[in-house]
Length: 67
Image (cartoon, rainbow, N blue to C red; front, top):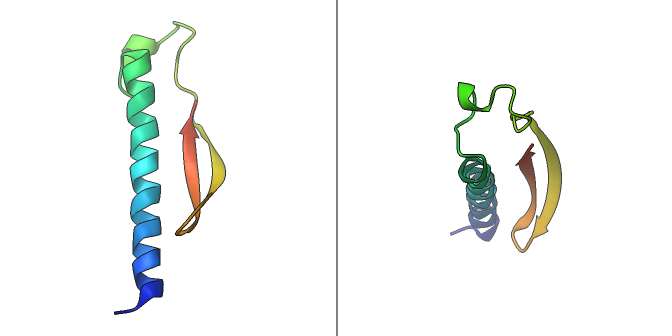
């Protein structure tokens, strides 16, 4: 039992969960999946992501915010 390893695991899982949720939220909002042709020339095409550092109780995580 090592608290540091548990915190590392929780931080990695939290980071993955937040990134997945942000991607799913944008998909639901736009109404199409990444790389789908539905968004082509609509003005709402996806344009990568930018990174932000978020401090959590388990330590800092890096979040990809999709555009």
